[in-house]
Length: 173
Image 1 (cartoon, helix red, strand yellow):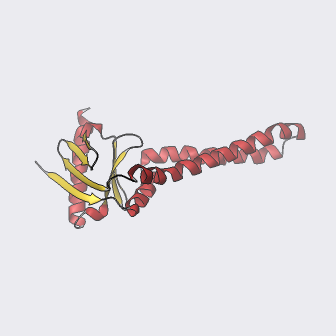
Image 2 (cartoon, rainbow, N blue to C red):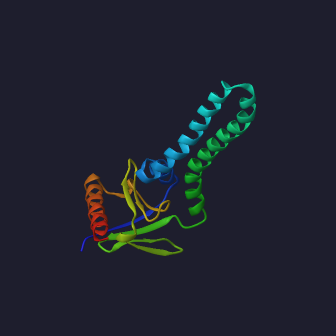
Image 3 (cartoon, rainbow, N blue to C red):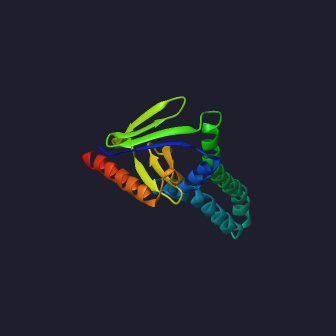
């Protein structure tokens, strides 16, 4: 039985990389498309309303501007809270992590808890520029910074192993 064991500290740099990488993952990207599209559509409708007769313009302009500003603000808050939320989540807790990846699943341990996830509970995996993200929910993931691997060969072998385990679990369902 193959397994990979990692003991590492999560750094602020890891969190910065993860907060950027997470938005490149397809199921997060779908959310991002919606939140980016809403302020753009609202702005277009606002501009179009300027060319309407004055009585319609007066009724529509203020609500449309407010809606545009609201959606732009919402996009800003959601994007920036990803990093802030991750940073706050670990602030004050032990940054030391121990992760074991094997045929059964993923076991993550820190000073406060141990969590075990079967491969069938992993909803998405992503190999990004600086991180490997193992999603255990729509917005929850296990972070593996690529810096923890000894070399590219170990990284590639581990990623292939993760893909095999994930695909086997997906095909069983």
